[in-house]
Image (cartoon, rainbow, N blue to C red; front, side, top):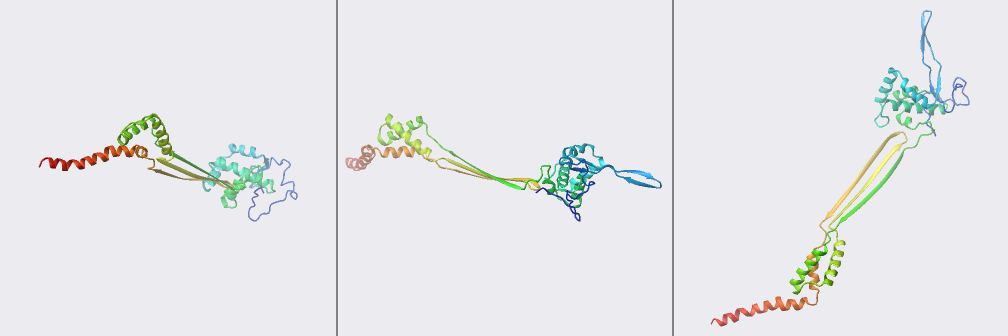
Length: 282
């Protein structure tokens, strides 16, 4: 339902029961912003009398354009009213005036003869709240306060992937030390494929982030946005290519024979060398 401001102690008039003085012939569904006529003073005999001017019914657009014709005293009234309203509802005096015009339109659509200045007065004395004005518009009912939430997440991984040239050189060095020979072309191709697969399965760094954004607007309050985010980074993974190459060499069928022919045999001969040498010097 459209917002219908009702001052304390008053009863909204019903359009069907109002007299012609309530709805002047100039009022239509579009021209439904009441603007009281300007007053003047005339000297009648020994006293001054207040002579009211002709009331007007304007469209919301016409009433908003009338802002440029406001007197300095009226602008000061708007400024002082704005100063007492919490921040977030109106950015300037003109915005407050436009909102009061919309509220006047909404009230008169529902049978209440209220001008924008009645709305401003209501804001000053607490009859109306800024939230009530925020829901009034020439389109009818104001929008309800709504909250929307959105979430997002992302992740990234880093890898150390050995190049072919480095892989070939590493395998040659390890096989020379453990098997006494360099690697064949097929061994180099198979080793690189196996090494890279292991490296891609073990990232050196993993970063994750997530966020939530919440926005609340309408329903008579200022727009409010909040966002939160979290991030996490884990490093230190990965594998040692040399360790992979050593395991490949140790799995080769020639590893045991080469170790026996070199390391173990050298150790055996070394063990025999000491007593033989000692016996030769006796």
